[in-house]
Length: 166
Image (cartoon, rainbow, N blue to C red; front, side):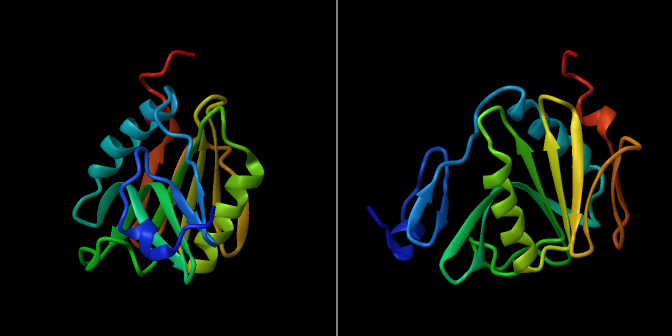
């Protein structure tokens, strides 16, 4: 049954879900190693303060009738003004769980790019691989380091997966 955007905004979901054109879309959250990778990302990214502010599971209004909940995002500059991000963050990070499909994740990445997000990282928590998406295209991270520019952020994948058993 379709849901209005006002109803979505006024409701708390556990876990939170995306709102796409009147439909609630479940997010695959709460599974280890997905949660473990998110925890390590938050720890590593907090070292880059004050250049960025890091937020887990934040709602972003990426289009008139679409609100996405990002696994982790980083904002460069002032703190967001609203409870739901209305302006694109500097960085969005999605961590694949064993239940995610690449097609659904690609749609989410396309929404982020359309919203104006400059840097998107996709991390596969099971296969220990990562990809970077920008308006120039996408590429797999082959040297083991996720990077952005202006501000310059570097995150070695070895740190993200440091506490995970092989």
